[in-house]
Image (cartoon, rainbow, N blue to C red):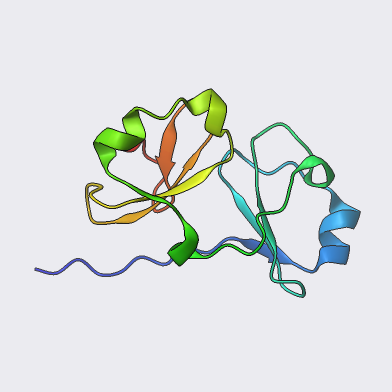
Length: 112
């Protein structure tokens, strides 16, 4: 039986509202600005204003790695980085680094 696609929804609001609220996003949590099209990925400790934007990026621009290759990337050097994992369990998908591990966007599990 085919697996149904899962919906991944990020937090979203206008740039003005994000700035006014200045929240701390959880590690790997995406905050999307609906009026600018830009987004930030939280690290679990820094406020919105301290996070950097991921700009001019789309899935086609993510560098592609296999699971074995991702395991060789030093997490501390790639904190808040994003890659495309071409052979991840459950199919190819984006992953982010929380500074310690590479995590799947789909469910937050460690890439394996």
